[in-house]
Image (cartoon, rainbow, N blue to C red; front, side):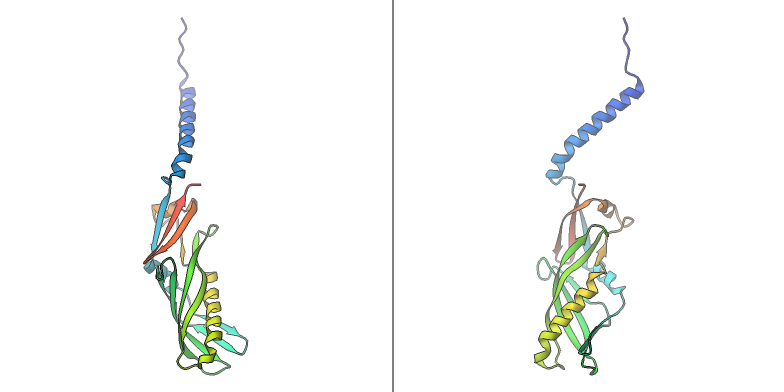
Length: 194
């Protein structure tokens, strides 16, 4: 009677194939249920620290208007709900006159760039400008110019970039972003393995 047992190498291959089949078979239902998702949180303080590293910005609009941002704006996450508020002191010069301070308040959404694994403010808009030294008839053009200044400021510089060396959660950044939301004081990004 010839009773041969499978060779150890063949046995390992069979077990590996079974394990892979089981993993693949369980992966889709687990992912559909959201059980494989990971959440990454980054705070308002982390965003502000990143912004504080940047230098000043100046934007000219021909000879009519010059707007400069001598220091980083302040960001408030989740105020209003689901959005970010941008507060800044901007120095404006109209027609070559000496610059006057203008207090800006704007809001923006958030977008994620998959290729750069970075989060950016999306479509920032100046909602109000407080410029006591400037005539009220200039407020519309000032608000428009400051919206453009904010877009220019935030277009190329991310608010936050996922780092592979930062935490185990951020190491999962090689996964795909499923959703992102702004909560009070933080951003929550949900990542999925597919």
